[in-house]
Figure 1 (tube, helix red, strand yellow):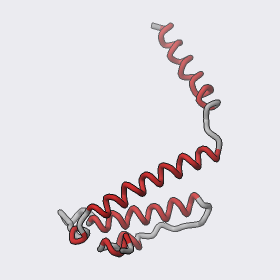
Figure 2: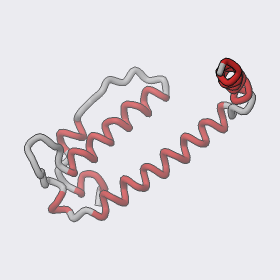
Figure 3: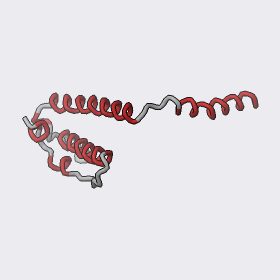
Length: 109
């Protein structure tokens, strides 16, 4: 039992050293984050386009956001986190979440 514990501890202690040597550089990390962000943005836009315009204000219960408010909340979060990543002193704002009620405002179409 002690040998098994020692082997597990040795593996755990040595594994961070091997992963450190394989970490991507800053350009690779930025590229991966950009690709992930673009993919996520595409999914959100596709969902926004798939939902009929008259359903943006639908609220199944008083305690949840409408679909439009949810999309606005995502936009507010994107503005905040991208601003912070760019080194700007950004404060959280619910401007989009509070004002987004229609597809037209989101998609500009």
